[in-house]
Length: 139
Image (cartoon, rainbow, N blue to C red; front, side):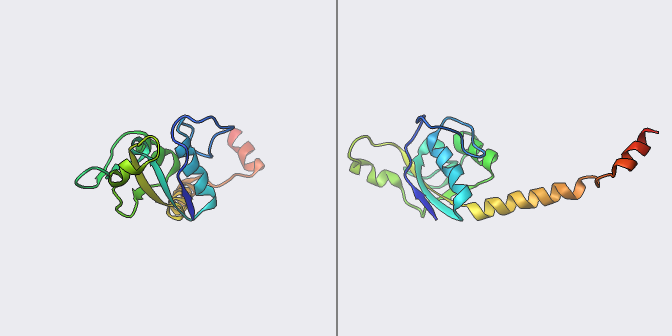
C-alpha cells in the first residue's frame, strides 16, 4: 500500500516516472507508486484529480484535464477517496489551504488491464519467420 501527501506542482526532480512525463510532481509520485504497490491513497490538488467531489453536491467524473491525461498515459483509474470532502477541513491547514481531493488507486487492476491489452495485441501479431523463410519471400 502506498500512502502519500506529495509536494504539489512543478517541484524539481532528477527524472521522470516510468509513464508520466508531465510537470506535476504529485502525478510522478502516483506513477512511481504503481511500480511498488498494489493499492494507493493520495492527497492531490483538485486540478490533478480525474474527478470532482470536495465542495460539491455529488461526485463528478471529469472528461478532460491533468488527471484524465494522467489516467490515459498510465492506465490507472483514480477513484474517490472514501467519500471524504476535503473542503470540510479547509480551515484546519497550518499555512495555505489548497483545494484537494483524496484519490484511491487500484494499481493491480491497472497492471491487469495492461497485461490483457498486451495479450490481445500479441494474438494479432504475425508469427515470427525463420531467416530462410524471409529470403524465400524475396525470390
